[in-house]
Length: 120
Image (cartoon, rainbow, N blue to C red; front, top):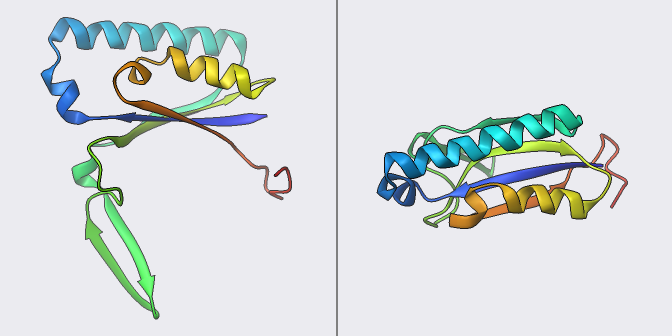
């Protein structure tokens, strides 16, 4: 089963960290990515640009509007994602718990439906 691991962080928290702390996080991420690549569990993933570059698009009554910023009114914002293919949800949760952002903000684990979407 494929799982999307959504990485949430707070840009302010990251800015408050020392260079050494940030480098430590990057080292942890590199180690996890290497492990997942070697095990064949990594499907893909990307970091996202700063939330200030986001646009939220809505269509109401046929009228399109695009507003600046992310939809959520929260300090924590979606910063990136990984897609992994694991035998169990427990394994996906284990991977998410090891991701450094889980220590500072949050990781969301969600099953990815196939194109038919009938698993649920």
